[in-house]
Amino acid sequence: MSSYTMAKQNLVMYCVECNPPAPFNVVKDLNEHYSLKHDSDINEWGCALLKCRKRFLNKSSMLRHFATCHKDEAQTASSFCVPSTSQSAQSHCFVYNELGNYVEDDDDTVSVTHSTGVPPVSPPLPVDIEEEVKKAAVQLLVDLRSTASLTGKAIERFEKGCDTLLQQFSVSAKAKLSESLKEKGLSDEDVNDVIRHLDIKDPFIGLRTIEEQLNYFSEKFGLVIPEEKFLDTRIDKRLDSSTNSYVQCQVNESFMFISMIGTLKAIVANNKYRNLIKKTSGSSDGVIRSHMDGSKYKEHPFIHKHKTVINILLFFDELEVANSLGSKTIIHKLAAFFYQILNFPPRAFFRIIIHFPACPGLR
Image (cartoon, rainbow, N blue to C red; front, top):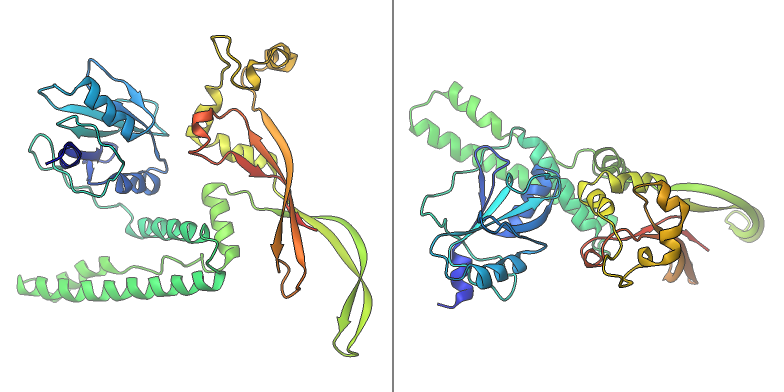
């Protein structure tokens, strides 16, 4: 058996924020758990051995650390992963790797075993099952919306299909559970009292249309909804269906505005992004690595006056889109102002979105 397979078979993860701790077999399940249950994601990995306690940005680096520093350890080599909302590295999700062999890639699809031989404690049932199902439905919608090839109609049909599948599963589960409980000698009243907890409402209620989804995201997650701003009017020609001829009409010119202040508030409300901004600092060895290492930046009075400064780079861009306004055959240009937050470290550029739209519009 290769070191890769052995390392994977001796890996176990569990969330100690849950009581009792919730075990997980793969990193993907752990990430989804933190996103849905604790409204955060894993920010760091680290070695939990008392004599080490080093931290890493990803699991591969942590496993490489096991291979190089704890390869000959007789006892269990432990590691922890810290969610972005955590302030302590010792009180959240832990990972145990008994062998400490380096894994070349990041495939997390194999099953794992507990290193101590003690079966992990089963995770507790959610306090509000309907709320957990609602969160899963919201996450599904976000994933579908991020796929450009899916239309709104396709997503709506997918929602209806998911609800039908969920209701059918609920009916089937209640029938099997009812039959099993009656075989155990329970009365009909007790059986009905048990299976009624399997009734699940449509999780997509209030999320059917794009307007409902935007309102929900704005209320729950602080999404900044674009606002249409009036610019001016122009004279254009439109076809009059009654006379079948073109007539002149007045058309409003507008653009979509996305509040920069609202977006920045949403960004700093996230613990991970806020900590990255707070940790911003220039080079200490004299090497110029960013704008913060320049003499003009260091000597600017605004920088000396304020302890924490959000550095923003504003720029303009445009791209051509076909039929963006409907059935017209001409090509339209989507013009937009974007801004980039320069406080994020270079190593985080590939992990997070650093470009935010300010005022997109068609012209």
